[in-house]
Amino acid sequence: MSENTPNSTDSGSTLALLVLRAWLGMRAVLTGVEKFSDSRTLQVPLLDAAGKPDSSGAMVEVTQKFYSLHSYHAIPDSMKDKFANEPLLPVFLTTPYYAVLGWALIALGIAVLLGIWTRASLFLMGLLYVSLTFGLILIKQDGGVSWLAIHVGLVALALTLTKYNRFALTRS
Amino acid sequence: MSSRETDAKAGGLGRRRFLKTAGAAGLTLALAPLRSAYGQTESADALNIALVGLGAQGRVLMDAMLKIPGVRFVAICDIWPYARTYGQRYLKKNGFEVRAYESHREMLEKEKDLHAVVVASPDFWHAPITNDCLRAGHHVYCEKMMSNTIEGARSMVHTMRETGKLLQIGHQRRSNPRYLVARNRLLNEAHLLGRITAANAQWNRAVSADLGWPNHTAMPAELLAKYGYSDMHQFRNWRWFKKYGGGPLSDLGAHQIDILNWFFDVSPSTVIASGGKDYYPTHEWLDNAMVIYEYKLPEGMARAFYQVQTTTSAGGGYYEQFMGTEGTLRMSENPKYTQINREAAAPPWDQWISRHLLAAAKAPAKGDDDSSANDKVDARETAELAAYYLPVVLNKAIHQPHLENFFNAVRGKGTLNCPADEAFKSEMAVFKAIEAVETRSLVTCHPSDFIA
Image (cartoon, rainbow over all chains, first blue to last red; front, side):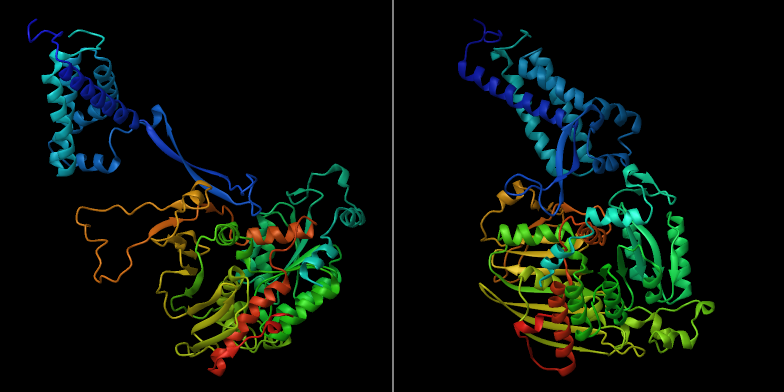
C-alpha cells in the first residue's frame, strides 16, 4: 500500500489525527457558538433555607446565559473599535468578515469533526486563524497572536497527517 | 407593654373597624375597587393619610407614599405657607385634593376620618405632634430622631403604650430588604463574618451653604415665635441649632448608629467621642465628630468607630462596615458602596453563592501595564481579599419599604419593623455620643438607659 493513500495504516498517526480533528473541530464549533451567546439579568425571589420566599420579600439579581441568533457578535465591541481605527482593515472588508466569522467557525468545525472534505476544511480553518492573526498583529495583541499561532500549528500538523485520515464522512 | 404587644392590641386598622369607619364615611365597599374622584384606585385597604411637615424630608416621604397603592392623602400641615402651597399643588398634580393646615392641632380637630399621620417636622416638634396624634386615635409614622431630647423621645414611647396605637420611627434601613438579608441571612444564619470584632461607619459630606428662602415667602416674626423659632434663618436651618435638632450625629449618625445596634443586637456599654464646631460660624451644633462605642457581644467585645464630617466628603461615601475573623461586610443604602470580602483563611462561601445570598464580584479588567496591581510593598501585608457583592435589589425609593411596613401594620397585616421602643434604644446611643462629645469623657451606658 502506498504511503500516500488515504488508507495508510499507522494506527498511531490515525489516532493522532483523530485527536487533532476532535480538538480543532470542538474548538471551532464552540468558539462559533459562543458568538451567539449573551447574558441577561433576572430578578427572582430570594429563597430561605426551606425553599420559600425570604420573609423580607427580597429579590435577587441572577445572571443567566442564553443563546440566540439576535445575540450574534463576531468579536467584542472593544476589539471592533480598535479594528475600526486600523487603516489596513477597511470597513468594506471587516463588515462581511464579521458577518460570516461565527458561521464559518461552526461550519468548518463540524466539517473537521465529521471528516467532511477534511483536507480542505483544515486548510480553510488554518486560513481563518491566519486572518484573525492579521488583525491581532495590527492592534498589538501579542498574547492573542501566540494563541492563534498554536492553533495554526495544530492545523498544519493535522494537514500533514491527513493521509492517515479514518472515520471520515468523505474520503478527500 | 412591648411594641409587639402594642401592635397586637392595636390590631392595625382591622377589617371590621375599617368597614365601620368607611360606612360612616358613606363608602360603598361592596363595589370596591372603585376609581376615586382623584383617579386613585380605592379598595378596602385604602388609608386616609395626613402629612405634617413639608420640608425636604417630608417631600421625600410624600414621593415615596405616592407610589404606594391605597394611600390617600387628605390633609397636609406646615407652618410655612410656601410649603403648604407647594404640597397642595404637588398632591393635586398627583390626584389628591388635600386640605392644608398651619397647626396640627387644628388639623386633628377637623380631620375626623384620618387613619394615620406621617410626621416629618423639625425634631423638636416630633414629640408634641406625635403624642397629640396618638392621643387623637391615629397611628403615626414619625421621622427620626424621635426628639431632640431624651424626655421627648421617652414620652413618645409612653404615649404609644398608653394609647395602643402604632408608632413607627423612620429608621428606614430596617425595612430595606438589602439590610434585612444582610442581617438576618448573612450574619445571623450564615455567620459569614465569623466572630465580629470591629465595626466602623461614616457619613462624610462636603461643605454646604446654609439654606435660604425666597424673600417674599418669609414668615413674620410673630408666626415664627408662635411655633418656637427665633428667625427665618434658624427655621430653615433648624438642624444646626440645639433647641430644634441634634446636629449631624443625630441627622446622619442616627441612621447608622441604629445599624450598629441592630446588627449587633445589643446596645453599647461605653462611648468616647470627640467633636467640635470648628468651621461653620453660623451653627450651634458640631461640624464633625468621631465616636467609639464598645459593644459586649455574647462572643466577646467589639468596638465600633463612627464618624460624621460635614466639611469633607472624603472617605468613600456613607456606609456601615462590620469586620469579623472570616470576612467584612460593608453595607450602604447606596449599593455601589456595598461590598463583602472573605478572609483568605475563611471557609468557602460557595453554598451562600449558590443560594444567591452572595455573588462574586467581577475582577477589575487589567491592562497590559497593570501587572503590579497586587504587589505588596511590605511582606506583612495581607493578600488582597476576594470580593463579593450582595445581589439583593431594591427597586423602590429607599423610604418606601419602611412606609409600606407601617401601612401594612395599620391594616393589621404584620408588625412594625421599627416601633418607638426599639428606636429609642438606638437613639439613646446617639444621645450618649452627644453627651460624650460635650463632656469630653468616657460615658458608661447601663442597660436600663435604653429602656424608655
